[in-house]
Image (cartoon, rainbow, N blue to C red):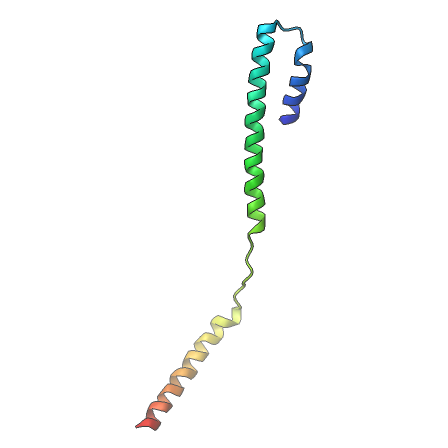
Length: 86
């Protein structure tokens, strides 16, 4: 789209429009070009920020399996300790 607007602005002076039309068309085309450029800049910045965010941590699948076994071991150890203290 920006390329088309650039070509339009480049050939606009040579199309034979009256000066009042040429001034108006040039101004409107320039404003549209500025708007499209700003929108593309914002999209680029959003994409750049999204690419930089990534996860460094991945939870091990064994963690959930061994967690239940560890809690059983801890509960039996705590039961043994309380029996020895009595």
